[in-house]
Length: 357
Image (cartoon, rainbow, N blue to C red):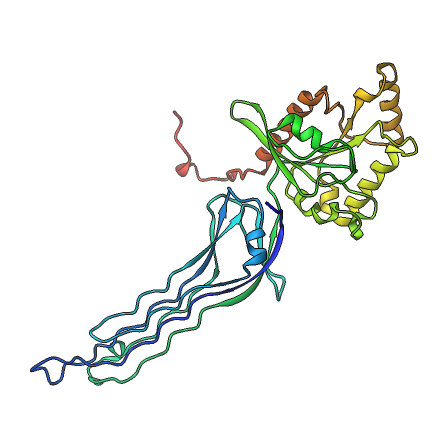
């Protein structure tokens, strides 16, 4: 299935039905009185977060979504039926923005979460509503209210705990396939990954986290070069970034330190908040370096890069060092999750506290 993380749609809720002017007609009832019912409510346009979806491709080709209008009121005290709602199923992580004003309207962050994109118009009043002691035969009615109409922009930011970033052919796809259930395409040429891949890393029983593999970045990505800039938004919701570096590039003229610095510069240009996220250095492809040269090469790389955070040495191909890396990443994710949970206020009234067991 084609991966699409941005789409524009038009939604139109149903108009409310009109009220009815009617009088009771029955044998031997000369003055039956008003019995015109109200019109029905127009249908809403709803959005629901579906965990089984991971792309907005359905909305790339179906841009117009319109709910039915409410039924008109009728005589004999019959109110019009409400119009059927239209429910749009979207991936978890979708951001709904007003295309005209740029205002963020909704964020679908939880599976099953339902929001209203366009509200249906209320039905009009029939003459039964205007009956009073001084107005026995009202002939007033009101039309139904129009439903809301909007042009919306849909933007998908995948929900992942850990994000992999690096230059093309750094070994990100090999790493995610080695530690998770993801099976991305792997080949010996650049830009093998053309869209984000998600995988679940299982550390133990009921211990897991989600990792995202993005297309490789190149210098100038924040200005539109390459593919990675199109998917950097998917890193904005991650809690930890793993900067994967090819320590043994195929081309001898390539400097891994210069490549790593270019990636960091692109992050800072794209989003300052993304640049400030916790970022670990993952030195990959150690299996291609003789054992007696590894320690010196790693030490020289870290010294020249002037990196102060955690550094992990791995080989995604042989899975050497992958397990300690994933264990540490899980502990980091769990620590941040606990820090993000709301805590009870310290001055809570003891009368409303939970009694001790």
